[in-house]
Structure formats: structure tokens, C-alpha cells
Image (cartoon, rainbow, N blue to C red):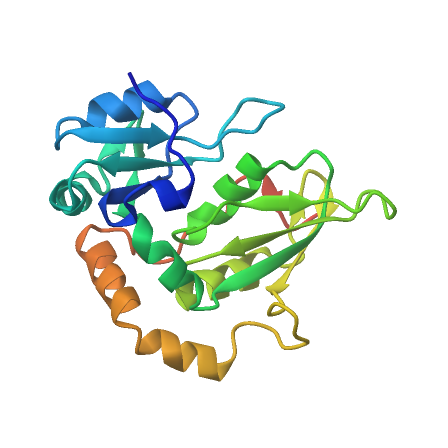
Length: 230
């Protein structure tokens, strides 16, 4: 039986895989059975919204050995589950990649937009490496916004240039690079891009993605995102 993962301090990060782009039909038990083919599993966890009980398209698999986690990345990445190719990488690498700075701000979101829709919309441009969260200002009403973190600047650049001033749920959104924490400087600077270009972890992941066919030309903008009234 699959059980929820404990806090990060209580699990072996090196033996834990991040699994992204999973269909809503996928639950803990399905992931458990799928990855059990690789080796013994300690825990499976798919974060869910407490109100809707739906997930945002990602989860975590903790194996009992680091070797099995490494093998899962090699053989399970881009395997189709319910018709969707899942993305598998080492969970312990996520925080290292987050420092790359390919983080965009999505503003003026309609209240009907939820985390799943934002994930599905921007997931078309590349690998989203952290949980998508939407914050809504109760004082300003419908001026919701969210932050999306990609694993490479090619994806964040494409998302910014393709989605800025597009319409989602009838409202024109704004897309730009997010501000750095406690700073007036935005992400996406030349310095960050230089660091990313020389990041061995990122280079390895990009090479794996290209070999798996993950990077495949210009992505298609979702049909429900459009330029507005003609």
C-alpha cells in the first residue's frame, strides 16, 4: 500500500525521484505499481489540493536504494502513462536547478484559473520544476498572480514571449521574469544565464532531455490561450 512521504528531513532525497506531467487519473497506487517494476519502494506521494482533492500533475517516488532511483530516471523518463509522457528526474537536483533563475511571473489571472490549468498551459514550453502556486489579493479582488519555475531559460523565454498579453479564461494576462527574493532586480539577467550555461547539473539534465526527445522545437500554445477579440 502506498503511503504519504514524510517531511524532506525524514526521507532519502538521493533515492527520491520527481515525477512530472502526470494525468489526473494517476493516483498514489498507480505510481506505486508502475515504479515497483524498477525496485523496492519506500514511499509514494502526490501533493493534492485540500479543497478540490486534485493534484497539479506531479509526485514523488522514494526508493529504498539510490541505485534504483538512478535507474528509474534512465528507463522511466518519457514513458507514457494515460497517453502523457511522464518526466522523471532526481528530486535532490530540484533545489540546485531552482537557483538557475528561469522563473516567470504570471499576473492578472482570472479567479477561475487554478494551479492545474496554469501548469498545463505553461508546461507546454518546458519542464516545470516546482509546484505552481497562485496567490490572490483579497483587497484587490481579481488580480491573482503566480510564479512558474522552469529548468532552463529557453523554456522561460519562450513562455514569456508566447504568453504575454494572451487571454486565459477571458482575461489578458501579463508574463514577465519574476523579481528576485527581497530585491528589485528581476530574474533572467546575463549573469544568471552565464551561471546556468556553466551549471553541470543543468547541462546533464538538458542532455538527458534531448536524448529522450523532450526538447523538440517550438511548442504549441494551448487552444484556450488566444490573442483576444479580432
